[in-house]
Length: 165
Image (cartoon, rainbow, N blue to C red; front, side, top):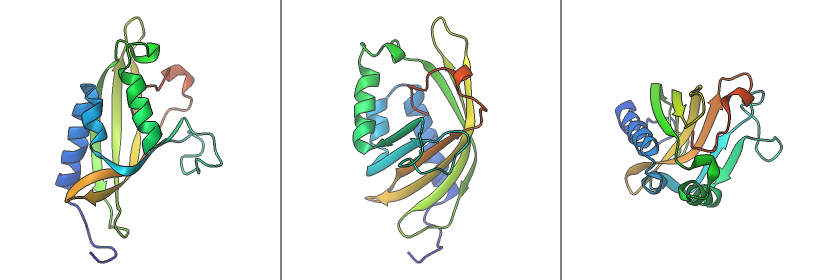
């Protein structure tokens, strides 16, 4: 594929995003992990530095694939008090846009709203946008990098982000 050629259609990317939202909303975390490339990374940057580098800036989340696997193990553990019982979430994904390929990576962008409900807590609403880099692995699209950028001015009122954005 030549530089700048479209490597994925919007419909194909939307199908991936909608499958991901369904898996996460239903706490099918092992199935969700199968949507990630073996060298995937997952970032939630600070609100004031959405383009920051996780090596030099304190991020809310800056996980490589090893840390993501560990996070999933913890989230599924009944002793994980932050997520036991698991939150009820509902993800809405909108405004999906696909950029021109950059080598073997496909930049894609989308907006999200995640409603989170936990026992004895007020409902929380997380609003923001995704900047993803996808790549093909064995013919299927996989998440190579996720950057979930929250629109909130401060995160304190939103509570814990122990679940996956």
